[in-house]
Image (tube, rainbow, N blue to C red; front, side, top):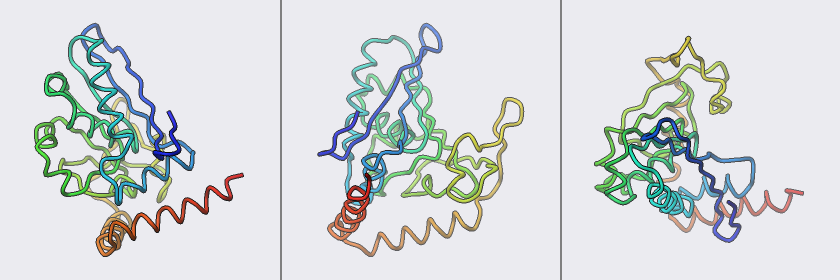
Length: 214
């Protein structure tokens, strides 16, 4: 689903694991300019159109399936899985047994303070590569597991680069200095800007990208 006016890219699917267990997977950012612009809109906009759509989608599909639910996604999809779990109907939230966020960005501090996040915190499983950039955006209330990637820098965001030992992901104890530096630098840069400045900067960049898209 694309909506240019809302600058929204959204897609999700329900997968039946067992008779009383379904996995709801939210798609991450695709290669469209709209998709990437919505990601960067996180710096001044909350909630995003796709986050609100994720909540509506979860509440709707939960009515059609019985039993427990697992939510997850990669990149922005992981962020949507967490947001939908935090803001869905309480009756649906009780059925969620786990939430998987694979290198998806966190949330603004004010959003984390919402009671909805506190009630699902122990259900969230967050995985990031050792030089994570996108996944380190904003705050993570939950703990995260560091995965070894065979790529470098931003290319570690590709989940197919994450190393697997038989049936388990290969884990590490520490992030790289690159990831830590990027996290601190971006955080400090954004905190110094007003919401209006953030909006103008991001819209200016993507306006230029759209004009050269063809």
